[in-house]
Length: 369
Image 1 (spheres, rainbow, N blue to C red):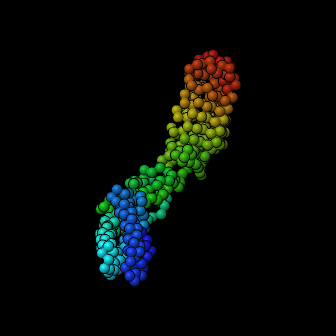
Image 2 (cartoon, rainbow, N blue to C red):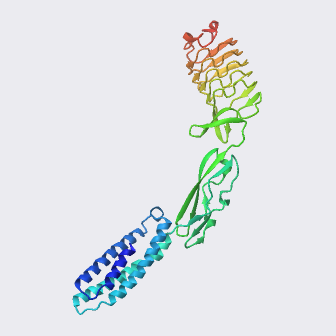
Image 3 (tube, rainbow, N blue to C red):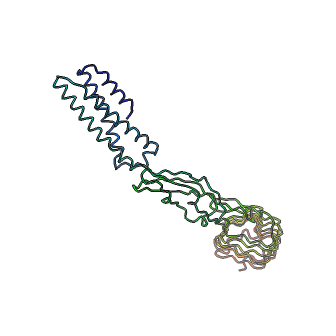
């Protein structure tokens, strides 16, 4: 519906110096077009339409202004048609019909009151993206956001947010959505980004696997000889220790996390670690991972540990080695340079016979279980 259309209609009528058939035909055409436009508007405003998806607030306000203008134009048009007087009965019938059309259009344009019911609330003072420390309690409704509705007025008290407790959020980025609904069921939403971070940690680390897990890469500052690696940092599981992460750090005692999956190459190379317990979750021990330490306990490689790299436990003081039933991938010299007196191979005990010395097991223990 364009104002130009109505300007043309009015200009046409003002230009009528007489009432002839061409004038009336032209006027009928213009009003027919107007009827089509208003029919389209009625369809748009149908209760079956999804106003929130099809119309923005700016578009709604523009259409409201157009409807007011249409009402004014219809009134002016009716006045002009009233001035058309003719003795021709057929022409007069047409004029009367045009008057009825205009009256009907004015009634249909009364939809403006219903139209207001579909205007959604509007947010103001929307906060920007937020950054908080892990386990910080942030009241997201206290950041100043407000909402105003064209019928209900101030609806700030009706604003809700889909994150109730920020203390349970893990490290990473979290979308936060605010919503507000007016008395007619119109909903408005807006979303900001909340980044949760760990500002202080004794370890350096990176996020891996779509930022869902932690890979520890070393110490962030002072390191102790007694190392306890946590199960999680910032609420995310520690699943990997990177290559060279704790190489030559003077470590004596190390506790590994129960969430650990991968130990990188030379991760604990050249320390003085006395014993190590590999969690059941570990599936890979890298090359030289625990080489050149002082390990004097028993090493049990559980079924889940599918890969043991070259020289992984080389040059220690290991006394016994246990190898799970499903482990087949053990690199050369994995156990060389130890004091092994017992070897326990679960499952098919002969599967390493051809590589016994290659992987660093004493030849005298071959076939002894």
